[in-house]
Length: 275
Length: 261
Image 1 (tube, chains in turn brown, blue):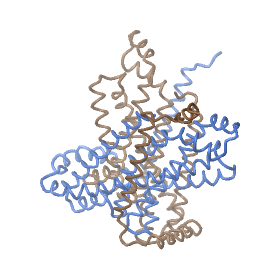
Image 2 (cartoon, chains in turn green, cyan):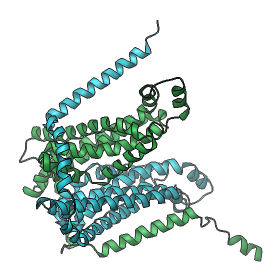
Image 3 (cartoon, chains in turn orange, brown):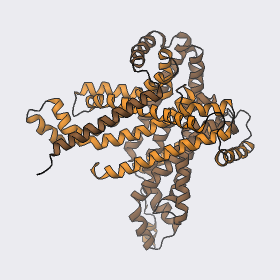
Image 4 (cartoon, chains in turn brown, orange):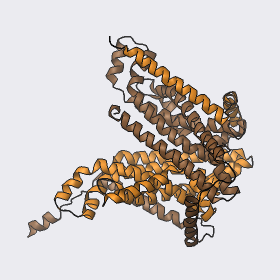
Protein backbone atom coordinates (compact mmCIF):
# COMPACT_ATOMS: atom_id res chain seq x y z
CA UNK A 1 0.00 0.00 0.00
CA UNK A 2 2.73 2.39 0.93
CA UNK A 3 4.66 1.54 -2.24
CA UNK A 4 1.63 2.41 -4.39
CA UNK A 5 1.31 5.70 -2.56
CA UNK A 6 4.93 6.51 -3.36
CA UNK A 7 4.56 5.61 -7.00
CA UNK A 8 1.65 7.98 -7.27
CA UNK A 9 3.69 10.82 -5.88
CA UNK A 10 6.30 10.71 -8.64
CA UNK A 11 6.23 14.01 -10.49
CA UNK A 12 5.62 13.53 -14.16
CA UNK A 13 7.02 16.95 -14.97
CA UNK A 14 9.76 17.75 -12.48
CA UNK A 15 10.03 21.34 -11.29
CA UNK A 16 13.29 21.98 -13.03
CA UNK A 17 14.93 25.38 -13.43
CA UNK A 18 13.56 25.70 -16.94
CA UNK A 19 9.99 24.98 -15.90
CA UNK A 20 10.34 27.37 -13.00
CA UNK A 21 11.48 30.17 -15.28
CA UNK A 22 8.70 29.44 -17.77
CA UNK A 23 6.09 29.57 -15.03
CA UNK A 24 7.57 32.69 -13.46
CA UNK A 25 7.58 34.43 -16.85
CA UNK A 26 3.98 33.47 -17.57
CA UNK A 27 2.80 34.58 -14.14
CA UNK A 28 4.80 37.79 -14.39
CA UNK A 29 3.30 38.63 -17.79
CA UNK A 30 -0.21 37.83 -16.54
CA UNK A 31 0.20 40.08 -13.48
CA UNK A 32 1.63 42.94 -15.54
CA UNK A 33 -1.26 42.59 -17.98
CA UNK A 34 -3.83 42.74 -15.18
CA UNK A 35 -2.06 45.74 -13.66
CA UNK A 36 -2.00 47.52 -17.00
CA UNK A 37 -5.78 47.08 -17.33
CA UNK A 38 -6.27 48.85 -14.00
CA UNK A 39 -4.36 51.88 -15.30
CA UNK A 40 -6.09 51.91 -18.68
CA UNK A 41 -6.85 55.43 -19.85
CA UNK A 42 -10.34 54.87 -21.30
CA UNK A 43 -11.18 58.58 -21.69
CA UNK A 44 -14.85 57.97 -21.05
CA UNK A 45 -15.32 55.46 -23.87
CA UNK A 46 -18.13 52.96 -23.26
CA UNK A 47 -16.52 49.66 -24.22
CA UNK A 48 -19.74 47.84 -25.17
CA UNK A 49 -20.99 50.66 -27.35
CA UNK A 50 -17.57 51.17 -28.95
CA UNK A 51 -17.28 47.47 -29.75
CA UNK A 52 -20.67 47.48 -31.47
CA UNK A 53 -19.52 50.56 -33.33
CA UNK A 54 -16.33 48.75 -34.33
CA UNK A 55 -18.26 45.84 -35.81
CA UNK A 56 -20.40 48.29 -37.79
CA UNK A 57 -17.23 50.08 -38.96
CA UNK A 58 -15.64 46.84 -40.11
CA UNK A 59 -18.77 46.00 -42.06
CA UNK A 60 -18.65 49.38 -43.81
CA UNK A 61 -14.91 49.10 -44.33
CA UNK A 62 -14.88 45.62 -45.80
CA UNK A 63 -18.20 45.40 -47.63
CA UNK A 64 -18.62 48.89 -49.08
CA UNK A 65 -15.17 50.11 -50.10
CA UNK A 66 -15.08 52.90 -52.68
CA UNK A 67 -12.83 55.80 -53.62
CA UNK A 68 -13.93 59.41 -53.46
CA UNK A 69 -11.08 61.86 -52.95
CA UNK A 70 -8.50 60.03 -55.05
CA UNK A 71 -8.85 58.11 -58.30
CA UNK A 72 -8.01 54.41 -58.58
CA UNK A 73 -4.96 55.26 -60.67
CA UNK A 74 -3.76 57.74 -58.06
CA UNK A 75 -4.24 55.15 -55.33
CA UNK A 76 -2.09 52.63 -57.24
CA UNK A 77 0.53 55.33 -57.77
CA UNK A 78 0.56 56.14 -54.06
CA UNK A 79 0.82 52.43 -53.26
CA UNK A 80 3.91 52.31 -55.46
CA UNK A 81 5.37 55.35 -53.72
CA UNK A 82 5.08 53.38 -50.48
CA UNK A 83 6.54 50.26 -52.10
CA UNK A 84 9.37 52.38 -53.54
CA UNK A 85 10.10 53.84 -50.13
CA UNK A 86 10.28 50.37 -48.65
CA UNK A 87 12.47 49.11 -51.49
CA UNK A 88 14.85 52.04 -51.47
CA UNK A 89 15.46 51.89 -47.73
CA UNK A 90 15.96 48.13 -47.90
CA UNK A 91 18.59 48.48 -50.65
CA UNK A 92 20.40 51.34 -48.90
CA UNK A 93 20.22 49.52 -45.59
CA UNK A 94 21.50 46.29 -47.16
CA UNK A 95 24.51 47.97 -48.79
CA UNK A 96 25.53 49.69 -45.54
CA UNK A 97 24.82 46.54 -43.55
CA UNK A 98 26.94 44.38 -45.84
CA UNK A 99 30.13 46.31 -45.11
CA UNK A 100 29.42 47.07 -41.47
CA UNK A 101 28.15 43.52 -41.01
CA UNK A 102 31.57 42.23 -42.10
CA UNK A 103 33.18 44.48 -39.51
CA UNK A 104 30.71 43.32 -36.87
CA UNK A 105 31.35 39.60 -37.42
CA UNK A 106 33.63 38.17 -34.76
CA UNK A 107 35.38 35.79 -37.14
CA UNK A 108 36.28 38.57 -39.60
CA UNK A 109 37.12 41.65 -37.58
CA UNK A 110 38.99 42.52 -34.38
CA UNK A 111 36.94 42.12 -31.24
CA UNK A 112 37.07 45.79 -30.32
CA UNK A 113 35.61 46.84 -33.68
CA UNK A 114 32.80 44.29 -33.48
CA UNK A 115 31.88 45.49 -30.00
CA UNK A 116 31.67 49.12 -31.09
CA UNK A 117 29.51 48.32 -34.12
CA UNK A 118 27.24 45.92 -32.27
CA UNK A 119 26.71 48.44 -29.48
CA UNK A 120 25.99 51.21 -31.97
CA UNK A 121 23.46 49.13 -33.89
CA UNK A 122 21.72 48.07 -30.68
CA UNK A 123 21.23 51.78 -29.93
CA UNK A 124 19.96 52.51 -33.45
CA UNK A 125 17.49 49.64 -33.29
CA UNK A 126 16.19 50.67 -29.88
CA UNK A 127 14.96 54.01 -31.24
CA UNK A 128 11.60 53.58 -33.01
CA UNK A 129 11.79 54.29 -36.76
CA UNK A 130 9.30 57.13 -36.55
CA UNK A 131 11.55 59.00 -34.12
CA UNK A 132 14.49 58.60 -36.51
CA UNK A 133 12.38 60.01 -39.34
CA UNK A 134 11.19 62.97 -37.29
CA UNK A 135 14.76 63.54 -36.12
CA UNK A 136 16.01 63.82 -39.71
CA UNK A 137 13.01 65.95 -40.62
CA UNK A 138 14.48 68.84 -38.63
CA UNK A 139 17.38 69.30 -41.03
CA UNK A 140 15.88 67.78 -44.21
CA UNK A 141 12.27 68.90 -43.78
CA UNK A 142 9.26 66.57 -43.66
CA UNK A 143 9.13 64.44 -46.78
CA UNK A 144 10.76 61.59 -48.60
CA UNK A 145 14.36 62.57 -47.72
CA UNK A 146 13.75 62.40 -43.98
CA UNK A 147 11.71 59.21 -44.39
CA UNK A 148 14.39 57.49 -46.46
CA UNK A 149 17.16 58.49 -44.06
CA UNK A 150 15.27 57.49 -40.92
CA UNK A 151 14.09 54.18 -42.33
CA UNK A 152 17.53 53.42 -43.77
CA UNK A 153 19.07 53.94 -40.34
CA UNK A 154 16.75 51.48 -38.70
CA UNK A 155 17.01 48.95 -41.57
CA UNK A 156 20.80 49.10 -41.46
CA UNK A 157 20.75 48.54 -37.70
CA UNK A 158 18.55 45.50 -38.14
CA UNK A 159 20.42 44.05 -41.11
CA UNK A 160 23.90 44.57 -39.60
CA UNK A 161 22.83 42.32 -36.73
CA UNK A 162 21.26 39.72 -39.05
CA UNK A 163 24.12 39.75 -41.56
CA UNK A 164 26.91 39.59 -38.98
CA UNK A 165 25.22 36.63 -37.31
CA UNK A 166 25.03 34.87 -40.69
CA UNK A 167 28.72 35.61 -41.31
CA UNK A 168 29.60 34.20 -37.90
CA UNK A 169 27.97 30.87 -38.82
CA UNK A 170 30.60 30.20 -41.51
CA UNK A 171 32.80 27.24 -40.72
CA UNK A 172 36.07 28.45 -39.21
CA UNK A 173 38.03 25.84 -41.19
CA UNK A 174 37.13 27.44 -44.51
CA UNK A 175 38.42 30.83 -43.39
CA UNK A 176 41.55 29.29 -41.91
CA UNK A 177 42.32 27.41 -45.14
CA UNK A 178 42.00 30.56 -47.21
CA UNK A 179 44.10 32.59 -44.80
CA UNK A 180 46.77 29.88 -44.73
CA UNK A 181 46.94 29.93 -48.51
CA UNK A 182 47.74 33.64 -48.36
CA UNK A 183 44.38 35.05 -49.45
CA UNK A 184 43.82 38.69 -48.59
CA UNK A 185 40.93 39.81 -46.37
CA UNK A 186 38.79 40.87 -49.34
CA UNK A 187 39.57 37.59 -51.12
CA UNK A 188 38.38 35.63 -48.09
CA UNK A 189 35.24 37.74 -48.01
CA UNK A 190 34.34 37.34 -51.66
CA UNK A 191 35.49 33.74 -52.20
CA UNK A 192 34.25 32.18 -48.94
CA UNK A 193 32.08 34.45 -46.83
CA UNK A 194 29.74 35.83 -49.50
CA UNK A 195 29.03 32.55 -51.36
CA UNK A 196 28.46 30.67 -48.12
CA UNK A 197 26.04 33.19 -46.63
CA UNK A 198 24.36 34.54 -49.79
CA UNK A 199 21.07 32.72 -49.30
CA UNK A 200 20.84 33.76 -45.66
CA UNK A 201 21.53 37.38 -46.59
CA UNK A 202 18.89 37.27 -49.31
CA UNK A 203 16.23 35.89 -47.04
CA UNK A 204 16.98 38.39 -44.24
CA UNK A 205 16.86 41.22 -46.77
CA UNK A 206 13.48 40.05 -47.98
CA UNK A 207 12.17 39.89 -44.42
CA UNK A 208 13.31 43.47 -43.96
CA UNK A 209 11.60 44.53 -47.20
CA UNK A 210 8.33 43.22 -45.79
CA UNK A 211 8.92 45.19 -42.59
CA UNK A 212 9.90 48.32 -44.52
CA UNK A 213 6.76 48.20 -46.62
CA UNK A 214 4.70 48.28 -43.42
CA UNK A 215 6.91 50.97 -41.93
CA UNK A 216 6.54 53.08 -45.08
CA UNK A 217 2.76 53.04 -44.60
CA UNK A 218 3.21 54.14 -41.00
CA UNK A 219 5.65 56.90 -41.96
CA UNK A 220 3.16 58.21 -44.50
CA UNK A 221 0.54 58.40 -41.76
CA UNK A 222 2.69 59.92 -39.01
CA UNK A 223 5.77 61.58 -40.49
CA UNK A 224 4.74 63.13 -43.80
CA UNK A 225 6.42 60.51 -45.98
CA UNK A 226 3.57 60.51 -48.50
CA UNK A 227 2.34 57.38 -50.23
CA UNK A 228 -0.75 55.38 -49.37
CA UNK A 229 -0.16 55.85 -45.64
CA UNK A 230 -0.77 59.58 -46.00
CA UNK A 231 -3.95 58.94 -47.99
CA UNK A 232 -5.14 56.61 -45.24
CA UNK A 233 -4.39 59.27 -42.66
CA UNK A 234 -6.39 61.84 -44.62
CA UNK A 235 -9.33 59.44 -45.08
CA UNK A 236 -9.32 58.67 -41.36
CA UNK A 237 -8.53 61.96 -39.65
CA UNK A 238 -9.66 64.55 -42.21
CA UNK A 239 -12.48 63.15 -44.38
CA UNK A 240 -13.69 60.63 -41.75
CA UNK A 241 -14.45 58.33 -44.68
CA UNK A 242 -14.52 54.66 -43.70
CA UNK A 243 -15.48 53.49 -47.19
CA UNK A 244 -12.44 55.11 -48.75
CA UNK A 245 -10.29 53.73 -45.93
CA UNK A 246 -11.69 50.33 -46.91
CA UNK A 247 -10.41 50.70 -50.48
CA UNK A 248 -6.92 51.55 -49.19
CA UNK A 249 -7.10 48.63 -46.78
CA UNK A 250 -7.80 46.24 -49.65
CA UNK A 251 -4.95 47.69 -51.71
CA UNK A 252 -2.45 47.29 -48.85
CA UNK A 253 -3.69 43.82 -47.93
CA UNK A 254 -3.39 42.64 -51.54
CA UNK A 255 0.21 43.77 -51.80
CA UNK A 256 1.25 42.62 -48.32
CA UNK A 257 -0.27 39.16 -48.72
CA UNK A 258 1.38 38.78 -52.13
CA UNK A 259 4.69 39.80 -50.56
CA UNK A 260 4.27 37.31 -47.73
CA UNK A 261 3.44 34.59 -50.23
CA UNK A 262 6.59 35.42 -52.22
CA UNK A 263 8.66 35.37 -49.02
CA UNK A 264 7.36 31.91 -48.12
CA UNK A 265 8.12 30.66 -51.62
CA UNK A 266 11.60 32.15 -51.43
CA UNK A 267 12.17 30.52 -48.05
CA UNK A 268 11.21 27.08 -49.33
CA UNK A 269 13.28 27.57 -52.49
CA UNK A 270 16.33 28.55 -50.46
CA UNK A 271 15.44 26.27 -47.58
CA UNK A 272 17.73 23.23 -48.03
CA UNK A 273 20.84 25.39 -48.30
CA UNK A 274 20.19 27.27 -45.05
CA UNK A 275 21.69 25.96 -41.86
CA UNK B 1 32.02 21.33 -74.30
CA UNK B 2 31.08 22.12 -70.71
CA UNK B 3 29.65 25.56 -70.12
CA UNK B 4 31.97 27.86 -68.19
CA UNK B 5 30.38 27.86 -64.75
CA UNK B 6 32.31 30.89 -63.53
CA UNK B 7 31.28 32.95 -66.53
CA UNK B 8 27.69 31.87 -66.12
CA UNK B 9 27.70 32.76 -62.45
CA UNK B 10 29.29 36.13 -63.17
CA UNK B 11 26.67 36.86 -65.81
CA UNK B 12 23.89 35.94 -63.38
CA UNK B 13 25.33 38.20 -60.70
CA UNK B 14 25.69 41.03 -63.21
CA UNK B 15 22.08 40.60 -64.32
CA UNK B 16 20.90 40.56 -60.71
CA UNK B 17 22.71 43.77 -59.83
CA UNK B 18 21.60 45.50 -63.04
CA UNK B 19 17.99 44.67 -62.19
CA UNK B 20 18.53 45.92 -58.65
CA UNK B 21 20.05 49.18 -59.87
CA UNK B 22 17.15 49.76 -62.28
CA UNK B 23 14.57 49.13 -59.57
CA UNK B 24 16.45 51.40 -57.18
CA UNK B 25 16.52 54.18 -59.78
CA UNK B 26 12.80 53.68 -60.36
CA UNK B 27 12.17 53.87 -56.62
CA UNK B 28 14.17 57.11 -56.37
CA UNK B 29 12.07 58.61 -59.16
CA UNK B 30 8.69 57.60 -57.79
CA UNK B 31 9.40 58.62 -54.21
CA UNK B 32 11.02 61.88 -55.39
CA UNK B 33 14.00 61.17 -53.17
CA UNK B 34 16.77 63.74 -53.51
CA UNK B 35 20.04 61.82 -53.17
CA UNK B 36 22.27 64.87 -52.73
CA UNK B 37 19.97 66.42 -50.15
CA UNK B 38 19.90 63.10 -48.35
CA UNK B 39 23.67 62.88 -48.15
CA UNK B 40 23.97 66.49 -47.00
CA UNK B 41 21.26 66.03 -44.38
CA UNK B 42 23.17 63.40 -42.40
CA UNK B 43 26.10 65.61 -41.28
CA UNK B 44 23.67 68.51 -40.88
CA UNK B 45 21.51 66.43 -38.57
CA UNK B 46 24.57 65.30 -36.60
CA UNK B 47 25.80 68.88 -36.09
CA UNK B 48 22.32 70.07 -35.16
CA UNK B 49 21.87 67.17 -32.72
CA UNK B 50 25.17 67.81 -30.99
CA UNK B 51 24.08 71.31 -29.97
CA UNK B 52 20.28 71.10 -29.75
CA UNK B 53 19.30 67.48 -29.22
CA UNK B 54 20.75 67.19 -25.72
CA UNK B 55 18.69 67.00 -22.53
CA UNK B 56 19.06 70.09 -20.33
CA UNK B 57 17.98 71.05 -16.80
CA UNK B 58 14.47 71.92 -17.92
CA UNK B 59 14.12 68.53 -19.60
CA UNK B 60 15.18 66.64 -16.50
CA UNK B 61 12.50 68.49 -14.53
CA UNK B 62 10.00 66.77 -16.84
CA UNK B 63 11.50 63.32 -16.18
CA UNK B 64 8.71 62.09 -13.82
CA UNK B 65 6.06 62.80 -16.46
CA UNK B 66 8.17 61.15 -19.17
CA UNK B 67 8.73 58.04 -17.05
CA UNK B 68 5.03 57.86 -16.27
CA UNK B 69 4.12 57.92 -19.98
CA UNK B 70 6.87 55.42 -20.76
CA UNK B 71 5.50 52.99 -18.17
CA UNK B 72 2.05 53.43 -19.69
CA UNK B 73 3.43 52.57 -23.14
CA UNK B 74 5.44 49.57 -21.93
CA UNK B 75 2.45 48.22 -20.02
CA UNK B 76 0.29 48.57 -23.11
CA UNK B 77 2.88 46.66 -25.16
CA UNK B 78 3.05 43.90 -22.55
CA UNK B 79 -0.71 43.62 -22.11
CA UNK B 80 -1.49 43.54 -25.84
CA UNK B 81 1.30 41.05 -26.56
CA UNK B 82 0.28 38.74 -23.71
CA UNK B 83 -3.44 38.69 -24.45
CA UNK B 84 -2.85 38.35 -28.19
CA UNK B 85 -0.41 35.47 -27.65
CA UNK B 86 -2.80 33.59 -25.38
CA UNK B 87 -5.62 33.89 -27.91
CA UNK B 88 -3.18 33.34 -30.77
CA UNK B 89 -2.11 30.00 -29.29
CA UNK B 90 -5.72 28.83 -29.18
CA UNK B 91 -6.35 29.80 -32.80
CA UNK B 92 -3.00 28.30 -33.84
CA UNK B 93 -4.10 25.00 -32.29
CA UNK B 94 -7.26 25.17 -34.39
CA UNK B 95 -5.27 25.97 -37.53
CA UNK B 96 -2.16 23.78 -37.32
CA UNK B 97 -2.19 20.63 -39.41
CA UNK B 98 -1.39 18.28 -36.51
CA UNK B 99 -3.88 19.66 -34.01
CA UNK B 100 -6.83 21.03 -35.99
CA UNK B 101 -10.12 19.45 -34.94
CA UNK B 102 -11.32 19.43 -38.56
CA UNK B 103 -9.59 20.44 -41.82
CA UNK B 104 -12.34 23.00 -42.45
CA UNK B 105 -11.43 24.97 -39.32
CA UNK B 106 -7.88 25.48 -40.54
CA UNK B 107 -8.58 27.74 -43.50
CA UNK B 108 -10.61 30.44 -41.71
CA UNK B 109 -8.07 30.46 -38.87
CA UNK B 110 -5.21 30.99 -41.30
CA UNK B 111 -7.13 33.59 -43.31
CA UNK B 112 -8.10 35.60 -40.26
CA UNK B 113 -4.53 35.66 -38.99
CA UNK B 114 -3.24 36.66 -42.41
CA UNK B 115 -5.57 39.67 -42.64
CA UNK B 116 -4.70 40.74 -39.08
CA UNK B 117 -0.93 40.66 -39.49
CA UNK B 118 -0.68 42.02 -43.02
CA UNK B 119 -2.28 45.36 -42.26
CA UNK B 120 0.21 47.63 -40.50
CA UNK B 121 -0.34 48.76 -36.90
CA UNK B 122 -0.75 52.34 -38.04
CA UNK B 123 -3.49 51.35 -40.49
CA UNK B 124 -5.32 49.45 -37.75
CA UNK B 125 -5.02 52.46 -35.48
CA UNK B 126 -6.48 54.74 -38.17
CA UNK B 127 -9.44 52.36 -38.58
CA UNK B 128 -10.01 51.87 -34.86
CA UNK B 129 -9.89 55.62 -34.19
CA UNK B 130 -13.44 55.77 -35.63
CA UNK B 131 -14.90 53.64 -32.82
CA UNK B 132 -12.56 54.03 -29.88
CA UNK B 133 -11.41 57.60 -30.37
CA UNK B 134 -8.26 58.73 -28.65
CA UNK B 135 -8.53 56.22 -25.82
CA UNK B 136 -5.99 53.57 -24.86
CA UNK B 137 -8.29 50.95 -26.42
CA UNK B 138 -7.34 52.09 -29.93
CA UNK B 139 -3.64 51.45 -29.41
CA UNK B 140 -4.24 48.28 -27.43
CA UNK B 141 -6.45 46.76 -30.12
CA UNK B 142 -4.19 47.82 -33.00
CA UNK B 143 -1.19 46.14 -31.33
CA UNK B 144 -3.38 43.21 -30.34
CA UNK B 145 -4.56 42.53 -33.90
CA UNK B 146 -1.10 42.55 -35.48
CA UNK B 147 0.46 40.51 -32.67
CA UNK B 148 -2.39 38.03 -32.82
CA UNK B 149 -1.91 37.50 -36.56
CA UNK B 150 1.82 37.08 -36.15
CA UNK B 151 1.62 34.67 -33.20
CA UNK B 152 -0.94 32.48 -34.97
CA UNK B 153 1.42 32.14 -37.92
CA UNK B 154 4.59 31.32 -36.00
CA UNK B 155 2.83 29.06 -33.49
CA UNK B 156 1.18 27.05 -36.26
CA UNK B 157 4.65 26.44 -37.68
CA UNK B 158 6.03 25.58 -34.23
CA UNK B 159 3.19 23.19 -33.42
CA UNK B 160 3.65 21.28 -36.67
CA UNK B 161 7.42 21.18 -36.13
CA UNK B 162 7.52 20.20 -32.47
CA UNK B 163 4.64 17.90 -31.80
CA UNK B 164 3.74 15.78 -34.84
CA UNK B 165 5.34 12.61 -33.42
CA UNK B 166 4.14 12.96 -29.84
CA UNK B 167 0.60 13.69 -30.98
CA UNK B 168 0.63 10.53 -33.08
CA UNK B 169 2.02 8.52 -30.16
CA UNK B 170 -0.60 9.83 -27.75
CA UNK B 171 -3.40 9.27 -30.25
CA UNK B 172 -2.50 5.59 -30.59
CA UNK B 173 -2.77 5.22 -26.80
CA UNK B 174 -6.32 6.50 -27.08
CA UNK B 175 -5.80 9.85 -25.39
CA UNK B 176 -8.55 12.42 -25.96
CA UNK B 177 -8.12 15.65 -27.91
CA UNK B 178 -7.93 17.94 -24.90
CA UNK B 179 -5.53 15.62 -23.10
CA UNK B 180 -3.21 15.54 -26.10
CA UNK B 181 -3.26 19.32 -26.36
CA UNK B 182 -2.72 20.05 -22.67
CA UNK B 183 -0.22 17.27 -21.93
CA UNK B 184 1.89 17.23 -25.06
CA UNK B 185 1.42 20.06 -27.53
CA UNK B 186 1.23 23.03 -25.18
CA UNK B 187 4.17 22.04 -22.94
CA UNK B 188 6.31 21.34 -26.01
CA UNK B 189 5.48 24.71 -27.54
CA UNK B 190 5.70 26.88 -24.41
CA UNK B 191 9.40 27.79 -24.64
CA UNK B 192 8.97 28.91 -28.26
CA UNK B 193 5.79 30.78 -27.38
CA UNK B 194 7.53 32.63 -24.57
CA UNK B 195 10.39 33.53 -26.87
CA UNK B 196 7.92 34.96 -29.42
CA UNK B 197 5.93 36.84 -26.77
CA UNK B 198 9.12 38.51 -25.58
CA UNK B 199 10.01 39.36 -29.18
CA UNK B 200 6.58 40.87 -29.72
CA UNK B 201 6.85 42.92 -26.52
CA UNK B 202 10.13 44.40 -27.77
CA UNK B 203 8.58 45.16 -31.16
CA UNK B 204 5.36 46.49 -29.67
CA UNK B 205 7.09 49.05 -27.47
CA UNK B 206 8.36 50.66 -30.66
CA UNK B 207 4.99 50.21 -32.40
CA UNK B 208 3.16 51.63 -29.37
CA UNK B 209 5.30 54.76 -29.63
CA UNK B 210 4.24 55.10 -33.25
CA UNK B 211 0.56 54.47 -32.52
CA UNK B 212 0.77 56.96 -29.64
CA UNK B 213 1.57 59.71 -32.13
CA UNK B 214 -1.65 58.90 -34.03
CA UNK B 215 -3.91 58.42 -31.01
CA UNK B 216 -2.41 60.96 -28.64
CA UNK B 217 -1.42 58.49 -25.93
CA UNK B 218 1.71 57.34 -24.17
CA UNK B 219 5.31 58.25 -24.82
CA UNK B 220 4.79 58.74 -28.57
CA UNK B 221 2.33 61.55 -27.88
CA UNK B 222 4.74 63.17 -25.43
CA UNK B 223 7.57 63.07 -27.97
CA UNK B 224 5.32 64.52 -30.65
CA UNK B 225 4.20 67.27 -28.28
CA UNK B 226 7.75 68.34 -27.37
CA UNK B 227 8.98 67.97 -30.92
CA UNK B 228 6.25 70.06 -32.51
CA UNK B 229 6.66 72.79 -29.90
CA UNK B 230 10.41 72.89 -30.73
CA UNK B 231 11.28 71.69 -27.23
CA UNK B 232 14.08 69.54 -28.60
CA UNK B 233 15.97 69.00 -25.35
CA UNK B 234 12.93 67.39 -23.74
CA UNK B 235 12.32 65.36 -26.91
CA UNK B 236 15.90 64.10 -26.76
CA UNK B 237 15.37 62.98 -23.17
CA UNK B 238 12.29 61.03 -24.33
CA UNK B 239 14.42 59.26 -26.94
CA UNK B 240 17.11 58.51 -24.37
CA UNK B 241 14.59 57.08 -21.92
CA UNK B 242 13.03 54.90 -24.64
CA UNK B 243 16.46 53.57 -25.65
CA UNK B 244 17.36 52.67 -22.07
CA UNK B 245 14.00 50.97 -21.53
CA UNK B 246 14.20 48.98 -24.78
CA UNK B 247 17.78 47.86 -24.11
CA UNK B 248 16.86 46.81 -20.56
CA UNK B 249 13.86 44.83 -21.73
CA UNK B 250 15.97 43.25 -24.47
CA UNK B 251 18.54 42.18 -21.89
CA UNK B 252 15.87 40.66 -19.63
CA UNK B 253 14.20 38.79 -22.48
CA UNK B 254 17.54 37.53 -23.78
CA UNK B 255 18.30 36.15 -20.32
CA UNK B 256 14.90 34.44 -20.15
CA UNK B 257 15.31 33.12 -23.69
CA UNK B 258 18.74 31.65 -22.92
CA UNK B 259 17.37 29.89 -19.86
CA UNK B 260 14.24 28.56 -21.57
CA UNK B 261 15.28 27.51 -25.06
